[in-house]
Amino acid sequence: MQFIKCTREALLKPLQMVGGIVEGRQTLAILANILLKKEGDRVSFTATDLEIQIRTSSNIGCGEEDCKTTLPAAKLLALLSALPSASTEVTLSQDERKAVLSAGNSRYLLAQLPAEDYPELNIGEMTTSFKMPAQNLKHLFHMVHFAMAQQDIRYYLNGMLIVIQDHKVRAVATDGHRLACCDDNSEIDFDGSVEVILPRKSVQQLMKLLPDNDSEVLVEIGKSQARFVFGEIDFLTKLVEGKFPDYKRVIPQGNDKIFLVNREELIGALRRAAILANEKFKGLRWIITPGTLSIQSTNSEMEEAEEKIAINYDGPELDVGFNVVYLLDALTNLKNSEVRFSLSSAQGATLLTMPDNELFRYVLMPMRI
Image 1: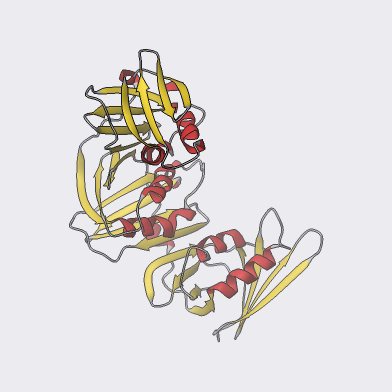
Image 2: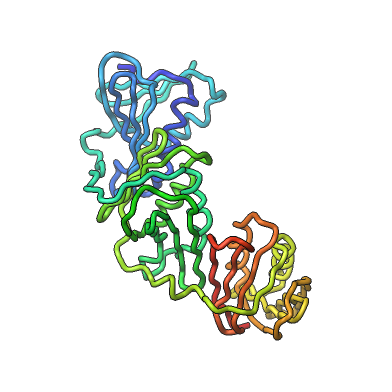
């Protein structure tokens, strides 16, 4: 029975949308599959890893009978991607044992698993609901995602804190060594106060899926789940349980040693100095004197590098060390021509911001060089 007939591109697009969360090694064999359901000419595609579920649909169904099945995600995506042209017509049909993918003179038999066994996630009660532009939400994620921890024993750091308060949305991420915080300047139609932690994988998938336009995203948040609905995509994720650190206490307020520096010039100097830095610790020494920032590095082979940049600084001399990776993560994420550094001492936390813009704050702890 044939149930899908369309171009290669029309079938590939929804499969790529949901297939990003399917991993190669699975505890359950069916989790390596994508659930396909045909109702009329509408076909829905669902993938889950039991923590995240993504569903989308498309009008590519054919035939009068409704049906459902699950097919191996990696193989189906690979076959479609390998076809010669985006406009190639493809069909999917099934019998009791196999699914058949046909394209021109090519025919591929794929193993099915019963759709009834697919572990779809149930949407729980959602207590918070609001809408915001897709590009605003994507921007928030983009500005702080790099500061999320990876496989930290403090599991609540392996994600992003979303704060909803005073009709505003804020995103915060930290790994214990640095902290990124960004506010959205638009207002939402929700007057409550909510804090939840999105898992790292959910943030990464949403960054790929959210469009760069002002189309609306419906955001729903419950006790243990969050849901994002935009375009044809319905994205459901479990939340990370646990108490996120008090990020407000981490952001320094009284740093009075301030200077501006050209962002591109600083990135170039950091990358060059990092070549001769200690490969394990990636530490760079900053000597800040009136009018000059000197960036220095050494390694176990006694090699040295020094880069000097002119800055508008007239305070006391400072000698401070930074992890160059943490610096570059933030600097390469920004777009403006100048950045502002605010320090209190060589031992205190450094604040990186954009001039005349308080929406983004990046806190960096110094390191001993």
